Structure formats: structure tokens, C-alpha cells
Image 1 (cartoon, rainbow, N blue to C red):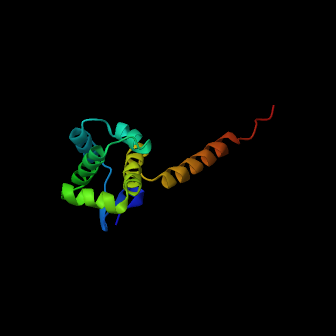
Image 2: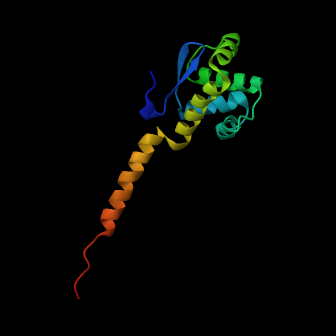
Length: 129
């Protein structure tokens, strides 16, 4: 089961669940395997501007980096069974978690409490003259 507070995401492929772990080392391994930056991959995925072979190589790299065994034929069948857009969403989630750290819910909650803290600091009584 994926730990969303650590930014982990679950990739469903053909009835199988795989936890993807967005650590710095895993990202470096993915980038080495695919030959480009993870943020570039994210842009391609969001724009749905990728080939089937690119998607297969992306998923292979994500799975290998997170410690899963990779069978390209099973992955291809899983993509077909699950649907391309259903498969790309968790990959985008992984990239987002890596880029911003943890989940966006966690960041939004943290950002709100920081804003409140700043507002409290600004409300200081004026010195009387």
C-alpha cells in the first residue's frame, strides 16, 4: 500500500498493483534509463504527447527504480487492459510528488498554516508615542 504522505503512488496495471517510490535515487535511476529529465517526461505525459514505446519505457523505468521486476510483455498487456490515461495519471502523481515533496494535500495544509503564522506575526500592537 502506498504511503501518500511520502508521495508514493500506486500504479494499477492489468489487475496488479505496484507502489512507486519517488526518492532522489529512484528519480536519478529513471532519468538514466530514459535519457531525459523526469520533468520533461511529466510534460509529455500531461500533454499526452508520447508514443506507445515511450510509455512502455517510462513504466519499465519507474517500476525498476521502485524495486519491481519488469516483464515488458506483461506491462504492455497491463497498459492495454487498464487504459493509457489510467496508467499515466499515477506517473504524473509520482513526478508531482517528487517535484513538490509529499502530497499536494500535505503541501496545501502546510501552506495554509504558514500563512496564518505570518498573519499572526504581522498583528503586533503599535507602540504608543
